[in-house]
Each structure stands twice: as structure tokens, then as C-alpha cells.
Amino acid sequence: MHTFTLVFLIALLFSTFTQFWLASRHSRFVRSHRNAVPKDFADQIDLAAHQKAADYTCAKTYLTYPSIFLHFIILLIFTLGGGLNVLSSFWSAWIGDPLIHGIALIISTIFLMSIVDIPLSYYRTFVVEQQFGFNKMTRSMFISDLVKQALLSLLLGIPLLFSILWLMEKMGSNWWLYAWFAWITFNLLVLAIYPTWIAPIFNKFTPLEDTSLKARIELLLKKCGFKSNGLFVMDGSRRSSHGNAYFTGFGKTKRIVFFDTLLSRLNTAEIEAVLAHELGHFKHRHVAKRILWSFVMSLLFLWMLGYLMQQSWFYEGLGVSVASIPSTAKALLLFFLVMPVFTFLLQPLSSLYSRKHEFEADEYAAHNASANDLTRALVKLYRDNAATLTPDPLHSAFYDSHPPAAIRIAKLQNLVHS
Image 1 (cartoon, rainbow, N blue to C red):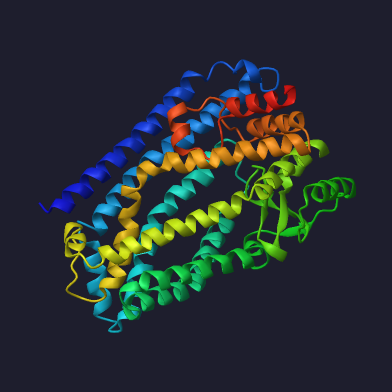
Image 2 (cartoon, rainbow, N blue to C red):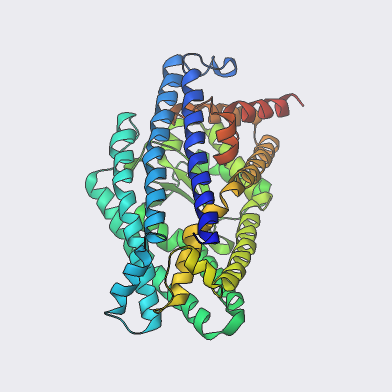
């Protein structure tokens, strides 16, 4: 067996086993705390709501088992199973141009991998979400969203793929630097057009009409030095009863968006506190920091790809032939297929970084609105969204971008008394 094949298999088995183990820990921990509401929440969340959250969390966790297993099998099929070789040979019989061949190979691979996810997504929406009363989506809407997502991915993805593959083939050994600039340009363009061109494809956005709420929010924005391109309400209730709020875009395209479900559940002071939290992300430049960090990582990954695509052991160890064209597309596909296997253990660092930002945004909200209002808003959202109050600590540390409820509320209460 090739040395890199062994390394890949060990890493794949380790990451797959760890995912199963963490999911199992999480469901067992949540079930073990199902019959008692944590004392800090006993006055606000009743046992029935707590048990619903536990059951909902376990149902979602159980659904990760087939997902983990299927992605394990699919990765083996496309690599050591020869799937990429078969697809490459198929397209070679029809397409001679290396660039077009590469685009066809990549798109068809992504398409086949995405098809496998559709039944799981369907089950999650129309069984799990439906069972717990969250799903508002119809089957026609589900299909419509899939079609829209596919067309949008092709519209944006094909020009990007063409540019990257062309740079890989034409720009010599430093192609990865040029590709990085192309990747940055693409991402900034998508961020700029997302609020006004992409998001409205899937949801309806209307200006906030509540005059008293609008006046209060505008005072908060002025206080925080935030200039937006408008306050909008999104019809999130068309698809789900989950609630949220966010701001999107940058520069003159910045928008503040409230889910209609959020506005229907929280009072004015609580909405202000939630928005102050989101503004905390802006004030601390969290979005900019994450974008910058993603650009730094993408530069590192592209540099690594530039090295690996010149190494025969990289292809041979993953069971992929480079005798036929295009090796650039195969290298790109292979790299991004197997990269998550080798970066799996970095996930807790990403989660830790994100939770740090959440704490900072909470503190900002406490100083510019009200920690008590934010606490009440969060507890309502935990209850209404059936978010578990008792996640497994290790699973949470590994995956959760937001702090566990008990820790987050405790920190907010400390801010009240400090």
C-alpha cells in the first residue's frame, strides 16, 4: 500500500470515528438531562419545553449518523474507488479542451455529491422539522429552492472555475498567488451583491414599518455609529418558525435584517438588545476579521495545492490517474475533497474563535442596550427554537459557534451586577 494512502485512510477513519463518537456523546448527555430544567432557567422555561428541546436536539443529532457515513463512503468512491478516473474518462470522450473538461469534471463531481444530500435534507425538513412544528416549507418550495441554488451556483461558479483553472495552467509556478487575488475579488463581489441581488431570490424583504421600533433602532444606530442602507423584515416564516436577526453587506450595501418570526416573539426592548449584539459584531470588526482570516487560510491552502499538484504521490496515494487531462482540475478536486479530513482537528479552534466574538458582542450589547433585555430575548429564543440548554461540553467545544446557554447567560448576569 502506498504510504500516503495509509496516511489518508488513518486520517479518514479517525475523523469519521470522532464525529460518530462526539454525536453519540452529545445525544447521551442531552437525554440524561432531559427530565430536569437547569435551575438557572427553571423560572422561564417549563419542563415540557425543555424536553421538546432535548428530543429535537437528539433527532437532529441522529440524522448526522447517516450523513457522516455517506460522506465517508462517497469520499472513498471518488478517490481510492476510482470515481474521479471514471468521470474524467467519461468527459474525455466528449470534450477535448482541458479547461472545459476540467469544469465539467468538477461540476459533475459536485452535482453527484450534492444529490446524496438531498434525501437527508428532505428528511430533515419534512420529518424532523415538521415533527417539532418548525417547518413551514412546502414541497414545491423545497424543489424551487434546490433549482434556484443550482442555477445560482452555476451562474457564479462557472466563471470562477474557468478563471482558476486558466490561472493554474497559464501562470506558471506562482499561479496560486494570482488565483488567490481572483478568489478575493470573487468573494468581495458576492458580499457586495448578496443583499440586493442574491438574498431576494429566496426571500421577500420589506422595509420595517413599526414606527416606534424603527425610531428606537435608529437612535441605537446613531449611538453606535452604524450607518445602514435600511432596516428590513424578511419573511422567514414562509420556510420556518425559527427566528433570527443579522446585518449583511459592507460599505453602502449594509442592511439590517429581522426575521418576521423574531419580531413577533420579542418586545421592543428585547429586539433592541438583540440588534445591539449584532452591532457589537460590527463594532469589533468580527465580520472583517473572519473574512481576513478566511483569505489568509485560502492563500495557505492554494500555496499547498501548488506544491501538491506537482507531487505524483499525491495522486497515486489517492488512487487517481494523471495520465489523462486535466491534472489541474483533478488536483483542485482532490485537494478540496480530502482537505477536511486533515483539517478536522482545527474545528475546535474555529469554534473557540467564534465563541470569543459572541461574548464580545454580548458585552457590547450590555453596555449599549440592556443585559437583562438581551438575557430575556435569548431565553425566549432558546425556548422557541428548541435549543438545548444542556449540550455535551466536548461536543459543544468542538462544533458550537455560540457559547452554551448556561455559560452565556451567566456571563450576561455578571455584567448586570458588575
